[in-house]
Image 1 (cartoon, rainbow over the protein chains, first blue to last red):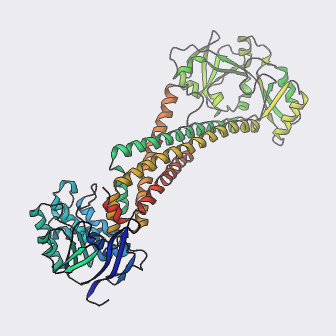
Image 2 (cartoon, rainbow over the protein chains, first blue to last red):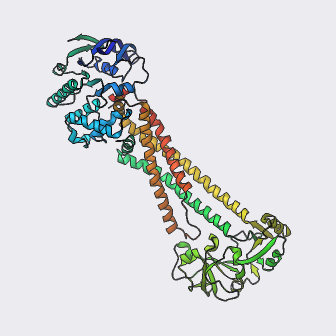
Image 3 (cartoon, each protein chain N blue to C red):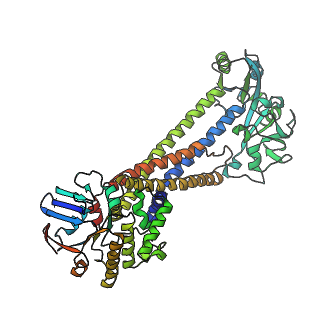
Length: 224
Length: 383
């Protein structure tokens, strides 16, 4: 793995339904540190599966995958890797409804040895960065869709990950709110100098990235 | 927010379900507490009964029952005869009769009118039945209308020194109130033996004899001697024998209590499994997110197990309160409450919490394990 590449994938294969469905059919991919990548492709092409592989939410059957220097095929417990290196932003914000906005942002820090006061300080700092400090004590159900997604972004960044993985982060939002979220992601990407990998259906969303990968039938079709 | 605070918040998201689960477990805990209080009360009464009785041996006529015998079953001459037995220090003949009480002040429960036990004894022998001090004065031997009554019956009948009680058509004046520590005596009264014998046509008769042995004598040995001398006539029981008999009964209640505890664990456990499984199902996506943000399997397991234990500990508190209230209500309205008071011991409290903890662990373990083993991608896709 070169120092520049934060993600290196070779011939990655993943099947479902006892091998009948080939979700990933030999992916080769290198992503440099600090890059902003969009992954496009039709439904079922394997783009979300690829994102899950990078985020160590699932394991491939063949090939190699190294992320932030960790060999994900050989490492047994990947929870620490997810905690320290990866920040997820989902299409649905997936916030915990009975916790406040602030408490939702604190959630990823339970696996670190950070004290409660520091957890609170960090969460508030990120809520300020996404423009929601004044709503820290509110319940997420009282927020708009865009605001909830901003909370989810704050949650993704709270452990200072090296990579942000966003799976259709604007998919459930109207275009105007979607633009706000995209601009926020773009600005955080440059400010925090994190690597960003975003799965999207929308070509105009994909164009915000440095590079667009097209996935088809579990393979990278082309890169632009 | 601490991890513990998070665990406290989660079980009460679905308040109806949590409340129902708590009620289910609390009923089991309440039963354990109520039974424990009754057993505790019996034990405490028994202990004080045995400690307070100064005489070590009770002699009754065969076939007349044990300690609770009443009426004139034996000749009073036996009181002197037994005193001459080797190892005996003193004896006291007691005539026991059940008296219906007419009282305008009334009692505290349905049983107050069913009467109480009046004992006739030589006033100089009161120490043998554990009465060594009286609030007021003791009755005079041969007096026609003096009586001392136990503290419990005094409270229940609302009687004080100077009050009168009608017994077998004769009005007695309460000259003193005693507390022997023996719950059977404390719910009764003592008067002059000869007076009671005359009043109840039991002249020269006693119901049973209390025997005090010499300091250096063995009560069991003396008891056996008395028994052997009159094998077809008398039955002698030592306080230790009585204690063993009562302990056997208590043992049965205790076994029942444990059986109910076990039932409470099984039923409560199934209830908790159901509640927690539902909770895990509903929160499948959330558990997926927790895994995605780096939570380890054991933290998820700990969280669900912790939630389950918190639920059952809350149920324990509710159940303990329910149990105490239930016992108080039952004793206040449905019994005479003369015989003994229910006692909440530390053992009962610990048992209630231990059962709740066990139910929490047993009921929470499987749902917690399931939650911890969820595959993150599948959990995140869960609708």
